[in-house]
Image (tube, rainbow, N blue to C red; front, side, top):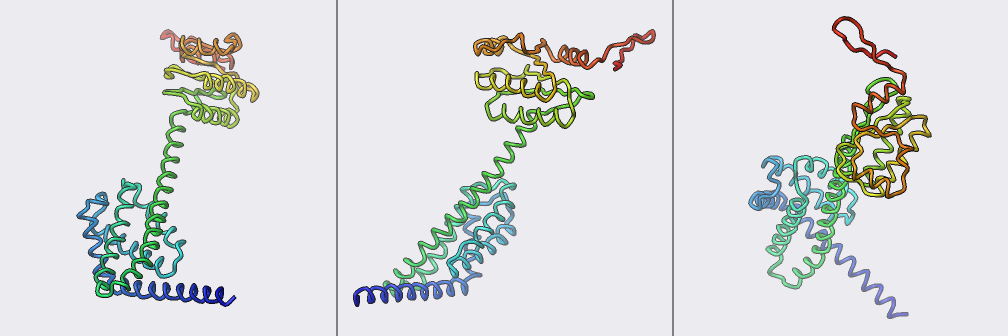
Amino acid sequence: MEKVQAMRRTSIESVQATSELFRELVEHLRQSRTQLREEWAQRITEAQLLTAMSKEEIFAEATSVYDNYMEALKTGTFEALQAYARNLSERIIPRGVETREVIGIVLLLRDVLARSLFAKYQADFALLNRILDAYEPAANRIAITVAVGFVQERERVIREQQEAIRVLSTPVLQVRERLLILPIIGVMDPQRARQLTEQLLRGIRTNRAKVVVIDITGVPVMDASVANHLVQTVEAARLLGAIVIITGLSPEIAQTLVMMGVDLGKMNTVGDLQGGIEEAERLLGYKVAITGEASDHSLRG
């Protein structure tokens, strides 16, 4: 029992000693703030990091990072630092700042502060070791926190950009009342196929469309899973009350559909987009009327 109590007392004393060391080293780094911040900003410039930012912007961010760094060392909590890292990432990612640059500047700061601690405590080697033993784990955790925050924000931006590209690459266009056109260009993968279906069904419901022309002239190849998804899309549109006309069907894609066992006779297919639009207008009840000597063409419903 006495041995356990002695171990507890030793543990408490160790924690208290570490806390005291932290207060001491943080106070030293706070007092040296101006000098160390300037040294750090200079090293960032020399290492050619954050080149997309001006010297004034680098110095302003260095000040904020330094203060948040000190707060994390002082309190041992990282919530404020995580929030700042996300905010910083939102501001500098659009500027073209890379992940390696963010990690680089944080590691530079860790090095600048460690050198300052070494210069202050080098006369007492035992104390220096205790100071560094207390500082290094916290500094490493801070570096990881900032790096992870930046990477997460960058991944979020990439996901949003990919989503925007997918939306733009599969536009659902209303060419006249109750008629939609979906021109598809580029490689189709399962994810994009799902996006296509969602957009198309949403467009049918929003525009109360009766006929949809899906043009796949610009699709070079289509594997079995995507071809199957196309068939399901046609069926889903039918359940919403819309007829789907497929145009631009290549021999290769037609062969893929046949190999899947799809009965092309059940799919409304037309050779090209112009023919598909004409067929869609016929289904909607539009007709071509010739008026005047100039034989102007106008569509009447």
